[in-house]
Amino acid sequence: MTGTQQVLFVQGGGAGTHDAWDDKLAGSLRRELGDAYEVRYPRMPHEDDPSLARWGPVIRRELADLRDGAVVTGHSVGGTILVHALAEQPPQSGLAAIVLIAAPFVGDGGWPGTEFELPGDLGARLPRGARVHVFHGLEDEIAPPLHADLYARAIPQAQLHRLPGRDHQLNNDMSEVAEAISPGRRRTRPPARP
Image 1 (cartoon, rainbow, N blue to C red):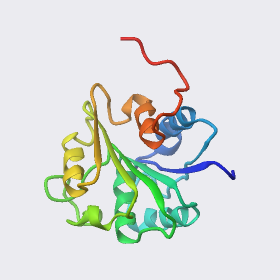
Image 2 (image 1 turned 90 degrees about the vertical axis):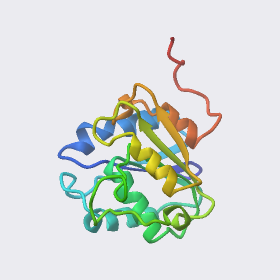
Image 3 (image 1 turned 60 degrees about the vertical axis):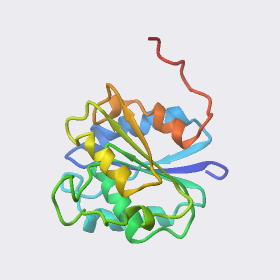
Image 4 (image 1 turned 180 degrees about the vertical axis):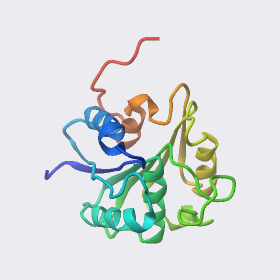
């Protein structure tokens, strides 16, 4: 789709997540962004047992296919693996933005683990010039909202978005994410009434 801005959306982990859970997030993002954006939503291998070893090569292939100015976004552990892959080996093309949604922080203060542990200089390792946004629902019962604060410390240039009343799936509403990707865009639906 020439002339459209590309958005790579990396799913979260868990059995059936691609088709039963995160497809709603990808669909919401497509609706909110409209026809000017191409939202790519690849299926990750062994989604019920995510690992950097299995998901990393797929993410790197997807990154290699992106044009300059693309946006990359990852949900849950998909965000954790995406940001790890970006820090480990930045893509050749220039990214417009990196968006993490309800991503668990693995490392000091976050979840324990060695495979996904993020480097202390994470912010410095990310592609230069890319805006970084960290979204987290304050009602998230899977990845504690504190993890967003840990990302904000590890990535000083990140803009933190704490969303009251939103769960791990952001209640399947990606309007704020779309606004961060495309500031000033026209809404595809009227704002909710108070």
